[in-house]
Image (cartoon, rainbow, N blue to C red; front, side, top):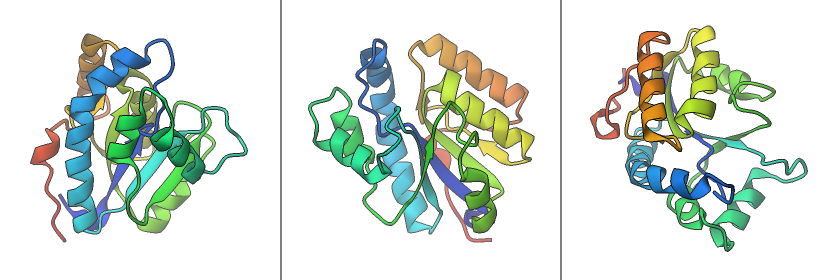
Length: 185
């Protein structure tokens, strides 16, 4: 994969998981989170931009760094997830007010600035925020890579159906995280 044209998006991985379906989602995503952490390390080693595209959870006056601190240090179900995937390097972040990483955000401008043409989408949930971000990326002619073991949904079968949809309709490839290698063009 050409590192010069790629960006890795971590969608809603800084997450308290303190909602009704949070425990099920957390259980389903933790194996994926370990794969995403390894993929993130490879991306950083290849100078591939890593972009945290995270819900603001209604905290309109809070910076992303404060959300990271609160969830990583707090007594929330997702604290372990947050510590595993928290930014530990110079990173990009885009706070999103809704399901898509593009809707009402600066993501499109950032990707243009970085000259990205391929998006690797990871995070939660496959059937909501991953799907809506993928749809919007497809409409903007981005190549989509959605590692099947780098995303999760509350219901596993729903996530699998959405991955099939994204392969068929959005022309996404869905390799395993470990199969993604970065090379310089």
